[in-house]
Image (cartoon, rainbow, N blue to C red; front, side, top):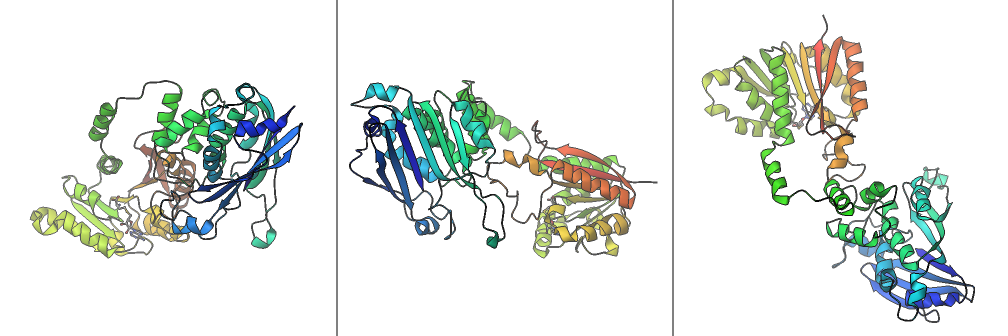
Length: 458
Ligand code: SAH
């Protein structure tokens, strides 16, 4: 991967002084995951071009070389040696560190002056190409993007996510380098380093003087910090000088606040009681956390629970301490193994059925079978069904882009998708539905859990 920087002006060879790299001598630098080379492809009075070439070892990346931050993050066959990615940022700061700080022993005046500079980034990994101009143009650059078509023989004909990007502007060299340092990883989503709070310091240091005023600063910060919400908020607070909430205050709030899981279960219990049910079936009961709450409710005289997983049921039995339960409680509970995707007579005759955080574990191809079992054959008066709202996932630090909350989830629905499915079920099986939200609400993305309360018509 290659980055070139061209300075056009009188005595353009002075670029060598500014970069602290002698145009007549190619240099080699050892990095954690490979080598970097600096050499000049053109040196003249009018135009001088310095090139930074990275030679990344893909095998080291895959194996997880000792001391390498990127250890084991990548497959053996990866694009890293060939594309301009977060590795380039790291190399820029290692190789051109002094130039980035704006210091120059010999040519301080030139280092402080805006110069006619062009940066060409070869094979920038950019999953979000539409943002390239949006981001660089407000910073005063003329932007040229060369795009490529994927080869159809690989079956993914269409626009490649790699581009050659040329930026031309009248800027100080240090500004150009800092812009590249921050913005290359904004376009590359596969960063090779772990994003920790240290990255905030780096981001703010390299973003000084431009990031605060950038019209897309939130986008830049979000992508740079890999969408880790708590880090993004910290960075934004520091950037806008807003005081951060007191650490101790926050911990206290956290401890007092019930966990999402508890909130969800108690909301579900409230719904079941509110619909007047006397009997309830907990479908896909897992370890029986909801079942346990049900058997303690006087209003409920019959409680059934089942799960497809034998292990989950064993744990449920342990947790419910069935043997030690009072006889009346024991008598009202029935626990058995079954699957939601096959008709089972034992599901019939209940006032209410709960399907809490289960539907997303079903294979999409089995959803229609599940719908018949639930709405057509079991046919309780009320159904309380919950599932994650995928839009809210941006708030979870541990969830990477385009992944789901849990390894066993087959899908997660947006609010629109859930509403669409629920509406279709009502039409097909004669129910009406009320969609509700559970958990902390984020203005843009709603709540972490969505719930449908279905009531039979007629
Ligand atoms: N409802 C519980 C558990 C949710 S975890 C709670 O809220 O705590 C999802 C559960 O769905 C798992 O226990 C899993 O075994 C169960 N499950 C997955 N597919 C199922 C199926 N086809 N039939 C019944 N249960 C199923």
